[in-house]
Image (tube, rainbow, N blue to C red; front, side, top):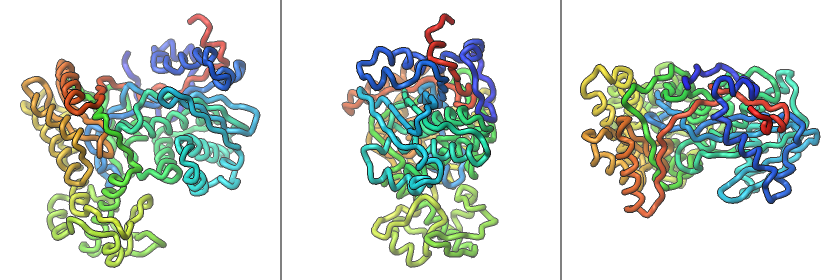
Amino acid sequence: MTPRGARSRVETRSLVEVRATGDEVWFRRALDRLRELSRESDQRLRTFFSPTAPVYIGRAPGRLDVMGGIADYSGSLVLELPLECATTAILQPQPAPMCELATRRGERWDYFRMELPPVTLGGTLGSPAALAEWFAQRQGARWASYVVGVLQCFMQRSAREGCATPTGLRLLIDSAVPAGRGVASSAAIEVAVAMAICSVCGGVVPSTELATLCQAVENNVVGAPCGIMDQMTSACGRRDSLLRLLCQPGTIEGHVTIPDGYRFYGIDSGISHAVSGADYGTVRTAAFMGYRMIAARAGLRAQRDDTRVRIDDRRWMGYLANLSEDELSELGQGLPAQMTGAEFIAQYGGITDSVTVVRPERRYPVRAATEHPVREHARVRRFADLLSSLSERPGAAAEMGRLMYDSHRSYGACGLGSGGTDRLVEFVAAVGPECGLFGAKITGGGSGGTVAVFGATEAEPFVRDVATRYAAKMSRRASVFTASGPGAAEIGVLRLESLDEIFAPA
């Protein structure tokens, strides 16, 4: 099947339409799940959906971070591949003013109920901050904050634009994207839910805006200081292409087709990672500390704004990635390797970042975190240039591999490496270009998660052998990602008039 170009807005499609284009395959897991509900032992699942009301299915994939990673919040170019594994959000409006959620987590189902009006219509939990505080006091229900935050955001948006919003909702989340493995499982949840609720409300939502709003939910409701690349890839990516995204704040420069004969693989290290963890947040904060110091050395005017600082920056537009190597050498000279938050606040007052806080007691890796996005942006641009003319440039694949290894080492210098991912990269390097494996790097927020591998198409057996040897050596499971899938906007939302449709002959 040939993928279509990514749609610019949420499109709702019928089962007949997705069958006609061959896209039913991407909704098959959700359709099978709906068929199986009637056989579940739990009465709540058997009666979760009304058999006669319409059902909306949003699907959003995980992603493989090929190049760019943590530099996204500093304005870098990134290259991201949507994966075949995806999350589906099956949504049905209901007359009761309730939000009822069900999700499968491992071998069990979890449930969540909340009164809907206070969340969506300006009641006691009608703001992201109030909702964040409510979930902060209920850690056992934190998984639901990703979903409820998105529902709040998009239903309020629809109401402001005069679109109809449902009185209540039932929503079942089913995910094949492994959580905590650095392949954007949280973004896949957010985007899938956003696709479904936008389809229900009927408003026109550009897919890039949808991704941006989902990122805001993760920052402001969930409390994870992620950049934009995960949500943008899940929403706007294309199958078998790398999304070329300039994160200033989120401009799609194109979709780069992967040349014949080459492929990007992912190997799960089996080490859990989370962008809400201390390591990722510390490095992000340190990068903004470095930007604040460089701006001061450049003589840019700074002004306190409550706990933040505003900088009049017409030179780099607020993004570290826009510094040249020469500017970094000149203005970054003497940046401290480590600095406490208290020392920084005393000298500089604060940072420009709106989603992290400088903690006085914490030590920050300022120099490495500041240097990384400047050099990563240059690496990604070179990588993209080589990829676009890979077949015409002898030695291009080997150079791309070296750029990935350099990126991996830079993650480690920031403190975001891990023993497991280092070992996987070492295994790939030992196999080498002679067997079609050119390079590898840690991905996403680092500190575990998945390693991206650049190799030849016929090198898949070597990738799987690396995973097998790693699993034996480290006593961990090491699954392999080999296939790409469509982004959410590429296939739209599936609308069933009733559950009877899924039992009717095709």
